[in-house]
Amino acid sequence: MHKIEYIIVKALFSIFQNISLKSGKRIALIIYYLTYKVFRYRRNVIISNLRMVYGDDLPKPLNELLKGIYKNFIFLWMEFLQNNKVVKEDLPEIFTIHNYDIFEKSFNKGKGIILISGHMGNFEWLGQMHGQLGHKTNGIAKKQRNPLVNQLVEKNRLRKNMGVIYTRNAMTEGIEVLKNKN
Image (cartoon, rainbow, N blue to C red):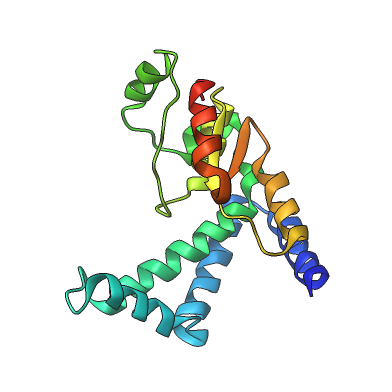
């Protein structure tokens, strides 16, 4: 089973790394629509999780939340599959950076920095961006159950001045990274 999953993930990387970002977004919109409207993938799990967090006091109407969650998830995966598109010369087209001078000021103090993103926007691309701007960046990630897929995903993450800290060792390795001014 691991081998089949690996072949599928590798094929997805191969396909989407060879199309434009614009085409990737178009395909992501189609997948989003199918996942949200037709297949309703894990819909009950998502609703259950929302209810655990918010009870009946949802911050937005349920359908609006579901659309946002599905869209964010699909776009995040599409962009992850297109990590190779994050190249230094295209950073201004890909990112809108606000208050970067605050980051630079902190970085120039010669200490490590903690950036917190969570699963908002594309945290994978955020790390790629900082890596290409010359900042050794480490993301905290959960190791994939499939070792073949984990190896493939890790290889993709380790490009361009990036590192990976797995959740099991996050505290110890995170402190070391900060001590090394990353």
